[in-house]
Length: 102
Image (cartoon, rainbow, N blue to C red; front, side, top):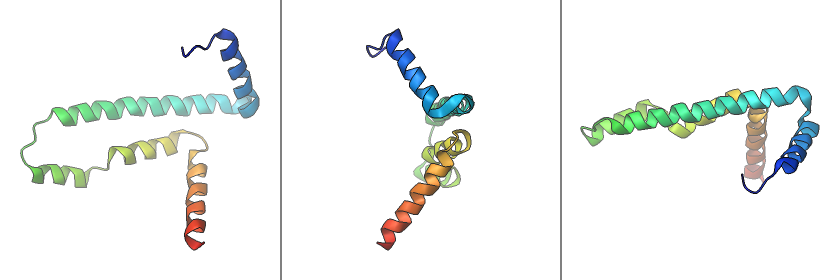
């Protein structure tokens, strides 16, 4: 696994424990697990949509207009499930607004 042995993994785990604390680690794990689950679900949706026959470009355009993009779905799920992600995105938006003003 990338040349990491047991001692290196233990050191990484200790650093993560010190940074996030015992209360945040289960929340982060739950959020990451949910995000992985959503990746799998979206992958299944993509394979189902790709396997359907396409009749015309017009029908495809209608489907694309009515359904949000995969990136939008994924971003929404990540913001809902990963603790702190929503705050990070709000800060990023504020920074972009300041950049526009400057």
